[in-house]
Image 1 (tube, rainbow, N blue to C red):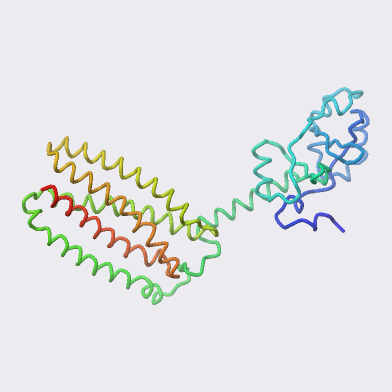
Image 2: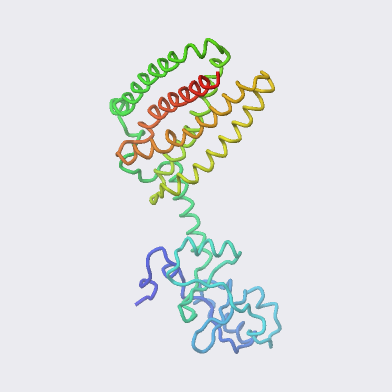
Length: 327
């Protein structure tokens, strides 16, 4: 029975070839060259010659190019590369490909726990793995792989189902917009005293919504392509990014508005509002899509309109509350 079939799928053991050139550590170059010429039809690849002892323990390796550079009487043990890079038969094929590419080698010997040579994964197999993994990754990012059950397949969906899935969320967004107008109306007195504040409402709303939209696109994509999704780790990384962006943008806004308007209060209101509204985008940009995904709604349909209007409401409220407090 072929030992290759004993190993897991997509493992080095399944990929390896056992018909590779193997020579004894005590032999010289002349003997090895003659042996290669005799066995040439039985060998799958001669990129490397694998050197073993009597018990088949791997002792070294030498490339075919280096072999023919050596004098015929030279012992192979004196010119071989000792302690070569090896892999176990159960190593995943992706790691095998990475290991060979990282170390710029054409093939890699496969050994067991006792360092006995089992075979080698050859360059053709390595390139095939790289190609297949690349195709899989491209398919994931292009959205042509198998879709999760809660993700709509737009290309095959009818007009009726598209409207049914998307229109209700947009109607909710319209209702939210009306509520946002009412919120602004509550702060009419503050805005009338400082009319310049009204001019910055679109900026406040835009910045926070843009950050939330970025985060939303990322999580919708990542939920679709990653089988194992660690939400806590993900939210922590996103929090650091959004916190940093909020800090930098608020500093930039503070400096620019103070330079233009020469009003410390306006600069403080704008910079503090933008910082807090950007932080709030963590909820609308990440938590809302994730929640809809868990509820088996397509986050691309549901979270966009809902997250947008919630973010707009939060942004306007934060901005006008801060303005009311300082003016």
